[in-house]
Length: 429
Image (cartoon, rainbow, N blue to C red; front, side):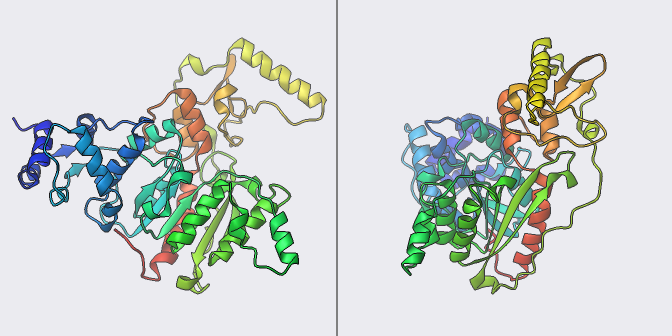
């Protein structure tokens, strides 16, 4: 009987035979996951990142970045088999990607996904015809969700990844954390008439890793996403250093604060920074941020008809939230819970939503209010119902609270891709 396990044995012993057999047999990614034990694990996740990245890039030049490590991992996993010959590893598993969001078959451009979270930005650019050739995310639970939906395990801590390990790409995408910088060194060097190099001022922050990758790989375009407060953070010093660094790296910048309420029933303002490489576009890119729709969204449209009672607040928690709100109102503070108008939009969902659901409470007639379910949180960020949620409720709340409004990102991406394709230079793989 020809099983996936037997097929893998042929793969390691004689890749030519394997390839002939593989043609007549459909191999699902879910079967390969079981046979090769592809599961997020802190001890092996970078090995599996190499392997899954290789499987998704087996026919293009990008495979050279992942092939040696993927080969080593498979040799260890199947140490009872003969050593795989270098010439044999070129034959790939003809994978049927039975995952919700498989890799683009005929991509128009390539991109990398940094600080990837659960893949909200990737989904947007994949929908636009892009091929993701590298992804990085440090959180183990987010990696589980990412792999379940995209069939690819992200690499870990970006600070430990060299630029030589990252494939060339057309677009760099990143939603990096907001951190303060010191501009004392810049001011001093200016006073002395020295060239300061803004990249030096970002060392020790995660933005530095975004900048060093841009400097080394010189993507045609980048898109960075962050919280609205990045603009005013640390008395505007942070945003100043970020934008000056990006300009110094040779890019023309476009940035704007956009609100997710134009795409989903949630007030969610984010700063989007887009950069076009000067040596390619000469400052003449046709990019503009998309016009915001006047469509009115209502949170009732993303709610389930029936919801488990476990999402209803307990009497103790509901009493605490009310007393907390009263106390802070007396002090003149605006802190408190957010009872959502079902015909309107919600407050901004945050990663702390798992604690008490206070910022977005759903009223229930004759009962205490309830928090959103994880699936409703996914919809509030624009994720389709086919998106798999393989983690606990608490982890799901954190993940969706940290994610992006996918249709907003896609609207921006559509205009970026249009400008990119006009120069007829993409490195589509």
